Amino acid sequence: MAIINKTGITNGGTIQAEHVTRTIDALSGVSTDSIVATGSFTGSFKGIATGTLLGTSNSSLSVDTSAGTDNSTHYILLANNTTGQQTPLTDTNLTFNPSTNALTLTGSLTTSGSLNMTAGASSVVNLGTIEAAGNFVIPVTQPTTPLTGSIYFDPGGSTLFIYDGTTWRNIN
Image (cartoon, rainbow, N blue to C red; front, side, top):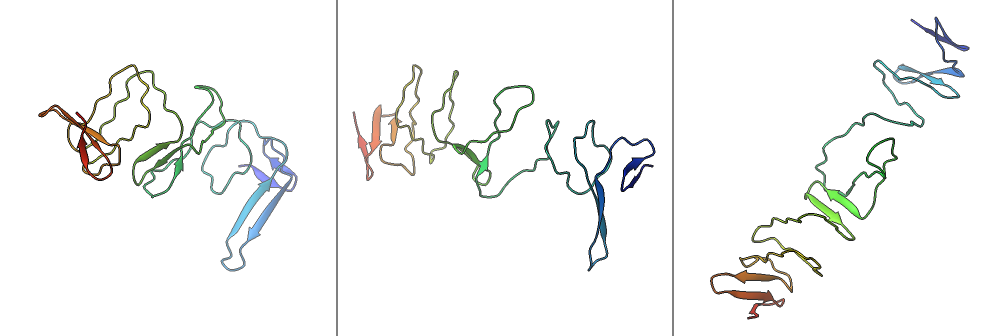
């Protein structure tokens, strides 16, 4: 067992504490100790610890996470490189809302492979400009909540329809 006192740690310890503070809560009588140190620590902190370790870390092997279900904006963590020590970054143009399962991107989406979107009959897919060398599949059932400019193809009558904001128009 190491002994911490005003001048540091004895019994083979290697850290010199600047001072030890003992705080006693006047209402509950519970006391806490804190060590204030200058300089830097090397090695790892092991064992069971409670409280907060304040300072800056050069690396971390893991972080505590929890599943979010609230209706709020969450920012996705990004890194500049695939390996090595990286500073986590966020971007306000890439967000996720766990309540609605909505991933929102403001800007361009670039893919080197296929972009597959699965939507139900009541789903709306808005495409402002399509610039692609591949195929674009048009829905074959009439969307139930269309926006102006929505389209669908009726394969039975080989008819293409567009929604003008009020009604579906045959554009053949």
